[in-house]
Amino acid sequence: MEEEIQFVLDSSRESMNKAITHLEKAFIKIRAGKANPSMLSSVMVDYYGSQTPLSQVSNINTPDARTISVQPWEKGLLGEIEKAILQANLGFNPMNNGDLIIINVPPLTEERRRDLSKLAKSEAEDAKVGIRSVRHDAMKELKALDLTEDFLKDAEASVQELTNKFIAKIDETYQHKEAEIMKV
Image (cartoon, rainbow, N blue to C red; front, side):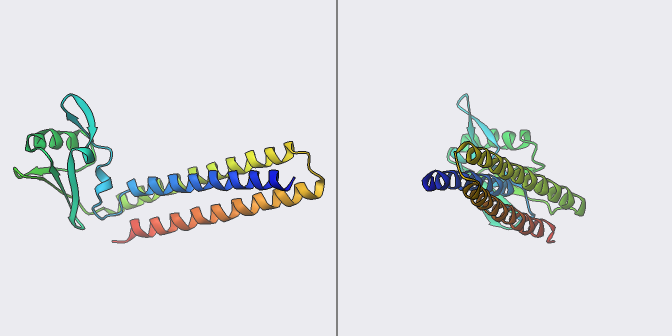
């Protein structure tokens, strides 16, 4: 009995950790005013006829907080990379200087900061839904086990405690991201 309950708790914890990891990856993609190489993670370049991620055909750096530099490994790709960045519709205007592409990241407006904050809140809510779904599945699994009422109540309390811990972690992560977004 004890092992079965522990297995349900462990698998729930693992699934909840995956939801947190997914949220953190989503937050990385939400721009917070500073230049970040991950801002270009969705850019795909036509590399000899196949769509290839920009990071696999170039070196992406941030020399300062407002600039991203993209240095392709083959100079012939400069035009393709420039075109791919424009087509990705990220709101960036790449400048090609013959050796590398420089992107000046414009500062965020107050309205854009609010929109990004709403997007971050939406991602956090999605993560909470995922956590609650895991809790629901765990409760179902516990009820399927042939447990005494006391064991069942204790196990359900443990699942709820785990859920509360992960929901609090999501709230903390969101508040940190919101503060980062709203900081001018």
